[in-house]
Image 1 (cartoon, one colour):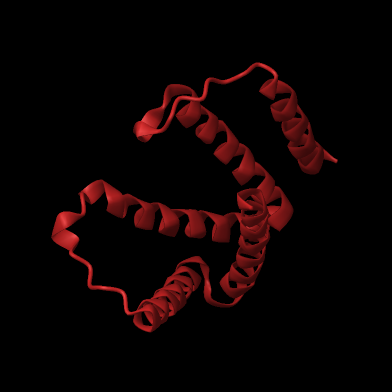
Image 2: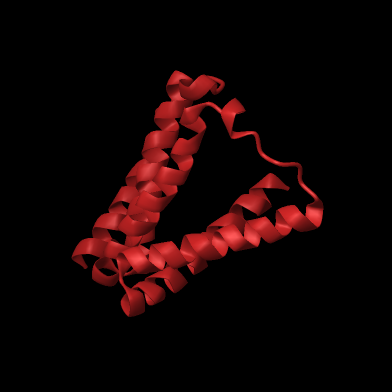
Length: 140
């Protein structure tokens, strides 16, 4: 079930980046990011109202948990800058390779209190294939 959800997430991410890249060509990298996050805020606010979610208690939330919001803004701005120059496929390919590297480091060392999942050298085959594909997209 979760593998299917992960695949759907990837499809939605690619669609999001495409449309946000199109919006960027009209409004610019920063304005499109603002629009993107405002629409997202209104959407999640509507969901919270419909589901009758209880209020947030910001004082109880450790500051580190606000970091994903900052990282989200940075991610979208950087994508907005890269997509017009590199195209969506290369931007997503390079981004996914970066995610793959970092997520493997987090798993291997058990960072952020995650369960340790040691890196197996067999994964290098997959890494190499992805890297060859990225190089092919860049130079061919």
